[in-house]
Length: 172
Length: 172
Image (tube, rainbow over all chains, first blue to last red; front, side, top):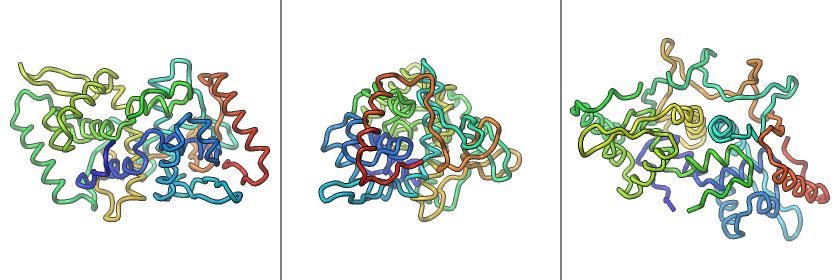
């Protein structure tokens, strides 16, 4: 298993994956958010995962503030998604959309709908002015959280590439 | 490491994670799509990952059709994202957005912009009629790819929950 060794990367994808980068973890969150499961035994039945593995992952999700643990009886607890956990819904929907398109030969197992109109919900990318952006058209810019170290590292990689005439042009 | 044991789940999130559910895998794709890295040595310098681990993951990404491998000299190859790989951009942007909000104390390291207006790009959820949906408002519906087995399994979990008056109402 990989440790949390991404900090050097100055990357929000890497930091997100430090929290939810284990596959079972995102499936636990899926069950908590979309299926409304709350109990240890619910998650275990849904996921078919070993007791220790589930315990570790639930504890980690609680420690990271993705789920909160509340007693509902003397001997048992329930796990509820927090605001921080629910904020992962757009990522879960985007992962769903990819799986529906590329790995669901029998069609989408689950469809997300908008209350009121019942319209099917899809992830989109839009700029701050509300205009849609094709995923292939994104520009990547340096933000305030980029580190000098990472910037220098990537510049070194890029300049070694620029000296190699055999390479195709980098993706836009 | 977990095997590809999710098929019972009839879930597009699980199927997506079978392909890109290892953290390094999504970071390799990030470097290929957003940083334009193409060579084995580029990925290795960017990620600081062991040779065997990187080799395994690149081979897997090629086998799954996320990257394609092309020779660029007698002894070396370059890896380029395919259409199927680029289709993961919305998921990468959604993972970035969560990390920017919840795990980037110094601000976003990377900002995605829309060509032309340079506006900052965010993931959104919209219904098929174009109306925005708050992530907490999604309805979850059964789609054509759902299996009888999984449906029965989830119904059994839900009915055991319904008999327990100590539980809070499930999340909408």
